[in-house]
Image 1 (tube, rainbow, N blue to C red):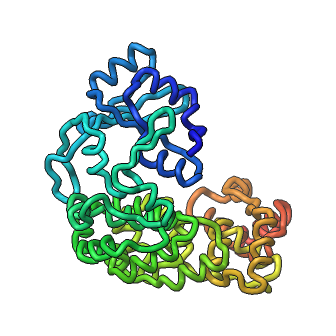
Image 2 (image 1 turned 30 degrees about the horizontal axis):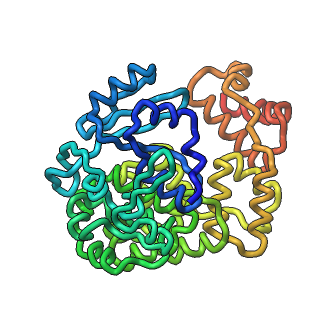
Amino acid sequence: MIRPAFLSDPALVAILDVLPDARVVGGAVRDALAGRTVADIDLATPSRPAEVAAALTQAGIRSVPTGLAHGTLTAIIGNQSFEITTLRRDVETDGRHAVVAFTDDWREDAARRDFTINAMSMTRDGTVYDYFGGQADLAAGIVRFVGDPTTRIAEDYLRILRFFRFFARYGGTPDAAAIAAIRHGVPGLAGLSVERVWTELSRILAAPDPGDAVDLMAELGVLPALLPEGTNAPGLARLLAAGAPNDSLLRLAALLTGDALVVATRLKLSAAERDRLIALRQSCSLVPAADDAALRRALADTDRAVLVGRTWLAGGDQPGWAGLRARLNRMPHPVFPLEGRDVLALKISPGPRVGALLRAVRAWWLERGCVDGPEACRATLAALAPVDR
């Protein structure tokens, strides 16, 4: 193959000058071979972590010990960072964690990686070392475990979810041995932290088209193990077919049938993710024929992105819904023009009555389509205030 352009990156060249025995490993090699954009660049080296740190320091390159227990440090040049890991072999695994020892054997290090497409390494001149047939699998669209799939899954059950993440992006034909091992390993998913589960699930859903991967997860029992509250894979399929934007939370909202709050709490979603998922799962109050007043009222009370997301979940690409989304996106966000100080200016004492008056005027403003300005709202406030004094 032609030497990949990323190998000429000045920051990477500087590191390889310092560590001439290092190679690029993992995703950067895979994506370069697949003709995709290379993002993160990781390296491996037979040199021990202390030797790597000393060499970088001598060359004036800053490094951070991000995972010394596993032989990893991060080199930082400008705004770029590169993980550099000493070659390793597994000593002990328990399904979640591994005890490792350092080695100088590149094949031994590659043998502990999850999939053949992730087990390749590349030298600075573009030479690829492929010990397990990763290039052929990449070309054939096969995600295949390195070695025995059952053994590899038992070492870390997160590899089940990583399988679907890579299958969603690189797969075409499911590997029979992998499928059998995954079906057998589903109970092991219960031992994973929910944070790790959500991280991988969100990455699966963020694939350009995760439909086949999610269908396979449902077929093998992985999906109900992850989301026991209830799922509907056809709902996600409809969203994907409609051409909705690539949005993990929107796709999760389409996939779920159970209580969104329960799911968000169990998976420990962030507060922002939780609130957005719950909001997306609420029914869409708008229809394509809604007038501008209805749209303004909706925008006054609900985030625009949530409203647009609900239209995808409610109508997808059915006639009229695209027009509704366009109108929502064009329409300025209406802002209620009064604040508490407007009530206090009428000599109303601070307290619950201030909020009650503001809510009353805002209800009037909403009913009229959110078009009245400050003066009209103050006049309505003044008319209401004597009654409430």
